[in-house]
Amino acid sequence: MLFVEANGAKIPAIGLGTWELSGRTCARVVEQALRLGYRHIDTAQVYDNEREVGDGLRSSGVRRDDVFVTTKVWTNHFAPHDLERSIKESLVRLRLPAVDLVLLHWPNPHVPLEETLGALAHAKRMGLTRHIGVSNFTVALIEQAASLSSEPLVCNQVEYHPYLDQAKVRAACDQHGMALVAYSPIARGRIKSDQTLVEIGHAHRKTPAQVCLRWLVQQNVSAIPRTSRVERLSENIEIFDFELSEDEMAAIAALASPKGRLTDFGFAPKWD
Ligand code: 1BO
Image 1 (spheres, rainbow, N blue to C red):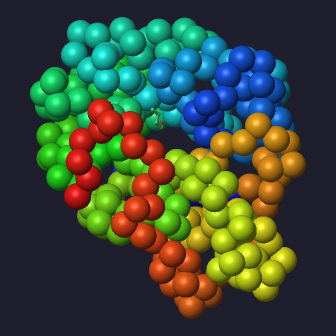
Image 2 (cartoon, helix red, strand yellow):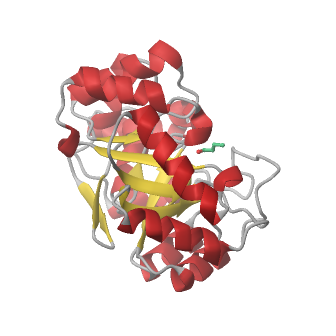
């Protein structure tokens, strides 16, 4: 498994996203993923599945120290006094003494960023998490966050796949030594019948999803595809035995379009 290195963190290049996985399915998928070799699991308070992620971690038999676990604080816990308490509650649900990474899940214009970042850095210094970062931050917000945070931010987790150009966000992350972590990396399955990806896949004997994930990893991006199907879990991790050429990388990047964003939550700030 390759790693993406960022501000002192080593983030496995492929992880399991658990957004919209719940109950016993979530626990089972986490357990299967770990048994298949995944070493990076991504959850969040708002996914309401931290307990099940903890169950899957435990039943997999994989050593805790071998897995990179991320959770995210939802925006209603950004007030400094509340943030630490909410991380501790996440740890209780996960049944872990600490996680590897805690992210601010979404920008919250109603609480000063400096205060939330101060509390997040404090949580790191208390040992509740090894690393801290952000999610769904625009270029302008990355700049602000990097200058305000007293502890290094290791990543910005955003929607990223071939249909969405994230060059500006990637460049801002690079400039501050942060990794980009891609959610919805296979565009919620829309890439499966994409002719460009199908053709490149034929050349490498890989599926469009594998080509897509390889394209992300070759940009030094960590991707967290989600699936509840065991055959897809294997497919998504079998991407370390081939390499895309520069021309193939460029052909995939050319698929981006201004309407490529899939997630529009309404409450999100405008993107650059
Ligand atoms: C509201 C959830 C977005 C992806 O983490």
